[in-house]
Image (tube, rainbow, N blue to C red; front, side, top):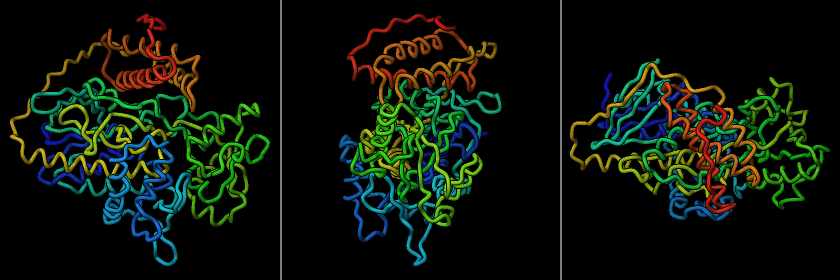
Length: 501
């Protein structure tokens, strides 16, 4: 197997694959997929991809205004302008790659409405848009002779070398070293740092933690979006998402008394942005003393519901709920990360030669709250820009023989103690769910730092449990550090390396 590449991409979601596709064919590219090829947050995206494409009544400026409003006007104006103006090219490209967006009877694309959008500009494939985009990008990438995709390849470590980067990868219980001139982190979000999340099993913040270790600035990691309408069966850690588009098509939110309540909190009612709706549910839960909430679309035509939301309809039936007749139990759940590895308008990080795209990056386009369906768009727009910048730089750089870092691996080291990841999740769920719990922040931060230092102090077997525990501890520490800085200013920690172990 070849061990040297021009570009290594960590992550096989929409950002990673589109980045690989967008690179020139003369460049050798390795894409690392942590687990199965389609196990990623991109594939779970239901609602669609937002963008102005062949829409005479809409405009990028209107899209930008809605993005700014949803993001609390904390959005970066330069990168947001890029996002909305390059949307048409991204949508046109994936259509040409075979993505099948739903159409109306007249042949025009069906654009749906979601919370925070003032116009119908969401392109979708039923209610499984992310999977449609992911599988079509994957199919095309697999045809490219310059792109190698490695499945079930765990990124264990990354080191900067004088010629680029060295990656330590575990595949089939074997440790492999790969080298590259440039690198793209497209490793997704941090959802698994919570007890309950809509994210897939790969979302443990590995890329963010490793970029942090390399010295890349991390920005606004505490800007975490909690989706207001996750299916609430109160037992499953990976919560099934009830798409924003269901409210876009007219669903109501109801409290424990089966009453609509959004009029108490926002004039936009159910179509308020996600953070507003999630906060409203928490306020209503405190008002009523109950966390029983429901989504109600039973007043719509049953055949329309089944046709428009076939995946949601089927999944709810599997749990015993017919959404054409029954109220759907819902509650806010961790869903998306607006912060991450800080990048510029070309997806460049603070580490020379390292780029970050998709949910693991902080482009600034989302402000403090992502507008629905802007995530897939961001993944495409900025991974293409990363590819262009890499191509420009590699075309002019002197290609010296790649240097390989000599990773030290102790195959006799013990595995990490059980329960570390569970402890981290409990901390985050208690200290920073929807709104910070001020009385829990300091203790939570102290424990996360304690776990980080414990994992660094001793030598453990390098496996999935160890890598994910280190990543989760690191991202939890950064999130709670930001939250504590906001709440208290600088916080002194009382570290006991052995506590709890």
